[in-house]
Amino acid sequence: MTTPMNESGNLDLSLVWIETAAQYLEAIANKDLKTMGDIFAQNINLYNWNVHAKGKEKAVEVNKVHLDLVEYTKIDIINVTHKEKYVCFETILTHRYLFDVADVFDSIIRGKGTVITTNLVYIFKFNDLKKIKSIKTYKLR
Image (cartoon, rainbow, N blue to C red; front, side, top):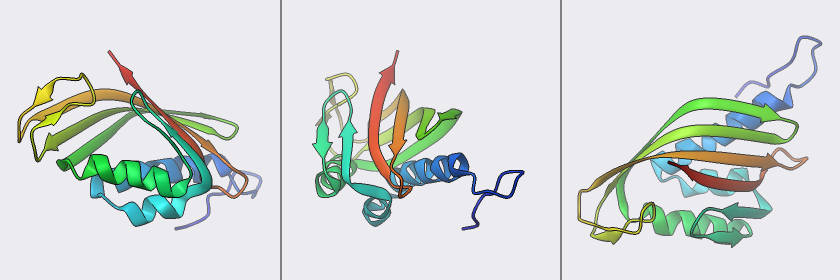
């Protein structure tokens, strides 16, 4: 990985943060819990409409529990914005479930092989060590 620099030759942290946030989405798609652990801060807070996980171990565990239910995940980033230590991605997420599950997106029982596509917004906050300090995920309707 190269270190992004701005026009004045200084480290461009916004590009580092955007790249790290994208790594998280890639880790979801690849079920790569090790990468998640590497990019999470020790005191990460992970929020969505169903879950609040505090701390790196719990955040990785929550991701594992969900990813164990899906055959594959595809995430398309359709919009990116950033300000200071925050990065926001608007995405289209697609899952194919391995089992009959109560779908976390709309609380309906889904059968094995069901494909769900949902628009999500991820808001990432970074600490001074360039690790993800918090992730807040929201559903768009």
